[in-house]
Image (cartoon, rainbow, N blue to C red; front, side, top):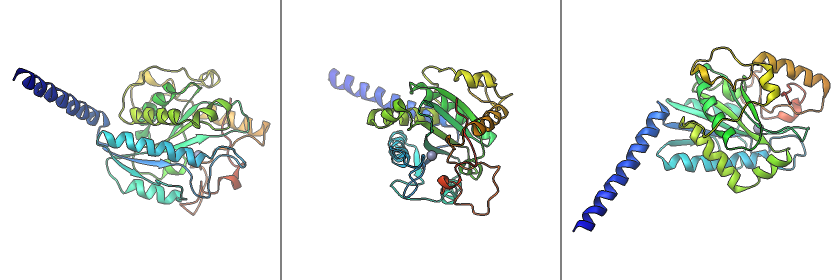
Length: 289
Ligand SMILES: [Zn+2]
C-alpha cells in the first residue's frame, strides 16, 4: 500500500501547498479580498480619439474579463462595473466601487495619441492610500510590456477622486502606436496584461524593473512616498508633468488629450465627465515625450 500512501501524501502536500499559497496571496492582498474591475468606456463611448482604428472599449473589456478569471481562480471576489459592451456612467462606476469595503478599484484603459510614436505604460492614482497599489500594478505591467515606462502619476480623474477605496487607473499602452496597437490585438498580450495587473493587485514583486522613460526621469521624481522609500523611481513629479503638458498644449493643439477628467475641473454632474471625452479634447493635455 506504499504507493497509495505515497500518492495520498503527495496529494496532501500538494493541497497544503495550494492552500498555503492562497493564504500567502490573501496576506499579500492585505484587507482587500474584493477587487472592483472597471473596464474603461463601452457602448457608444469607444474611447480613444475620433476615427481610431482599434476600439479602446473592446480591449479594456477583454483585459478586464481576463483579469476577472485570473483573480477568481485564486478565490478573490471580483465585481465588474461592466462585463459587456455597454455604456456605464462614471458616477455609477464609482457608486459600485463605493458599495464595497475592504476592496480595491482598478480601472483599465488604453492610451492614444495623434503622435504614433508615443508608447508605453502609465498608471494613475489620486488618494495617497492608492500609491502603493499603483506602484505595484505599474511595475508589474511595465515588466510585461516591451515598451516605455511612462511612470506613475497622481491625477484627479473622476474614478480615482470619487472612489472611497484605494483606486488605480492603468493605461495599458497606446492603441495608436504601431507596436502596442498590434500587441493589443493579440489574445496572448492581453492575457499577459491581465496577468501582470493581477500580480500587481496581489502585491507580487515585478520580475524586473524597466527604467522610467529618460525624458520623464529627467523631469524629476516625487518626494517621500507613503511607502517603501527606495521604490520611488517611477513616480513622475506632478509639477514637471504639468509644465510639460502646457508646453505640449501650446506646441500642438491636435495632440492627444486624456479621456479622463481631472479634479481641477468643477462639474455638477457626477456621472458624465469622461462620458463625452471627444467634446472636450483640448481641455487637458497629456504629456508626450
Ligand atoms: Zn480610456
